[in-house]
Image (cartoon, rainbow, N blue to C red; front, top):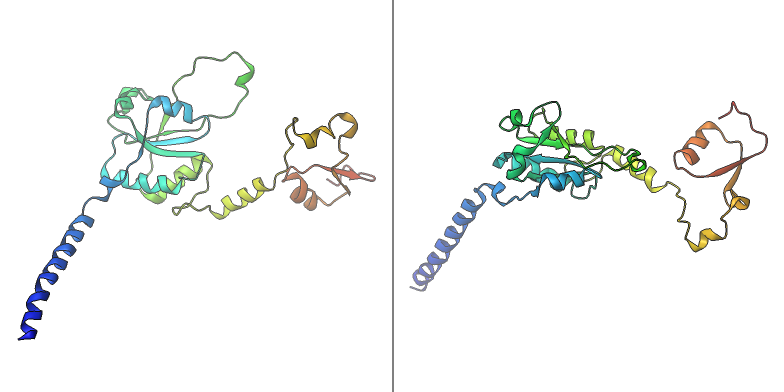
Length: 236
């Protein structure tokens, strides 16, 4: 008799668990892209952003494309030289395309790439009216690996899908981390050695090194060095 009562008591619990499991399966079967939100950019935002980073935006984001770009945005979330998102819909028809008229591209393209503005010496001339950045069309396939390679190539980045740096990126980071830099002129430690008299007074002094040592230990690291002794101009 006790066994029958126990089984009757257990049945509602089993039904509840089955119902809960069914809800979980239904929920996970929903389109995940609905919960993946991309940063929205206007053309004005992009014009300001390309001073420091390139920008890849979706124009007509489908759920599949949104899911891919969301994964890429996570891979590049710690990368200052690349931004990924979606373009404000009211700005889509206003894009200026490289080598194409704006109206010809609106319905044909789902991705627009805005390259980083090249560093130049325009600061030396009278500033001009800032023009909207021109977009480039992406011709590759809409896959994670293809888009990842495209962004790394065009933006000069070295990210992998998990967000880590590739082997080439690690080498680059090590070089940048070991570069020697000149301190600010207002630094207290710099004032003691300022002026022509003390130029090179605190730099390392070495005899004429081999080419390999000079390039790897000094040239690639921007490390200042004073080479002493008789110098043979053909040695370096």
